[in-house]
Image (cartoon, rainbow, N blue to C red; front, side):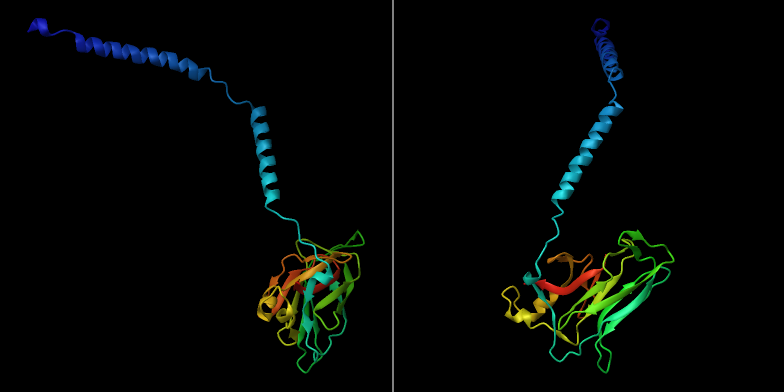
Length: 235
């Protein structure tokens, strides 16, 4: 039996250990000789990624739709609606100011509300306003329809504190145009499509920023500058 005790297992174990040691020795130099990614390559890769993401972002943001006034259905007032009058008010940067334009009926039914937060005045004809400045504005309601002209011209509001305009048409709104349009199946569908539109340039109308429903039979939007606004839906 002594002759049948070869040193095979120890030898194999030794060979395996030697192989592992040899293999480890051959692998470690490869790892230690790996060249790190240079900072310039990292910067280039980061810049390329930013450009790619920006390009993809642009693809997902379609340009604002532009309509002529003839392509819009402006919400009308009912024939018996008492016509709201023009209104002027002083707006102060030091405090909030709310201006309401009402129908001159027995209940002073609201037609339009403009809320000017503190620090809403940015500039007039390019001249900046300070925190203590003020300006007199005039609101001219649309004749027989829902819209208004805000003056003086050249008045720009702060992007972080822009005024909010809210139309209320629950009493005197006439949505019958929705029944005669091929775009809408009913007056209800027409009313649901209403937005506040601003005239960006001559007869170039686009939806005002943040336009959307406000309560029951109301629509509000941000006012970024003086000019003309209407409550309408695409024809």
